[in-house]
Amino acid sequence: MLDYINGNKDALEKLYEQLQKPLYSFLFRYTRDEQLSMDIVQDTFEQLQKKKNYFDSTKGRVQSYLFQIAYRLMLNKLNRRKKWQSILPYLTPMTPLFTNDDQMTIQEALLKLPEKQRAVIILAYYHDLNQEDISSILSIPKGTVKSRLHTAILRLKELLKEDYL
Image 1 (tube, rainbow, N blue to C red):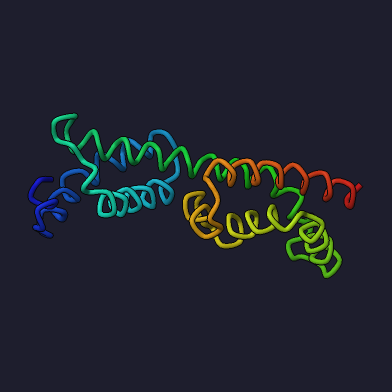
Image 2: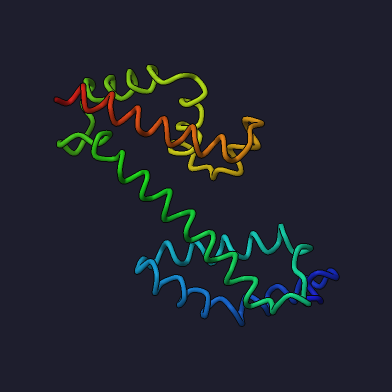
């Protein structure tokens, strides 16, 4: 890891070769989702590239550091998936394709949200951005992103329940 921090790009490849399989196994045991696990492994190494200077060899091994990154990414993705699945039944009609009425209902529900909540929902679920990216784009704290997402999801559920009852 120290070689990589000091600019040796081959060191990252060696780290990937050594730790990709153990990371994948760890993630797959939790998620039971092959594709999700592979995606998180890739995201973990992307995070390592972005945050390589935060690694402190006196606090632990690089393997522990990578597993910590992977674990946090996994929790974030699973939480996002859980939130998405909670709203999905209201966004997905019983027929395989959206009818014009369904599309209009969803659009109307989104338009009824306050602008700040609508922006967060669209960035999170239509553009698949994480909370940090949304925070950066909207210039608001990450905690505000979380609370707006939560509030917007609850409001959308209410609006869509009313329309489908």
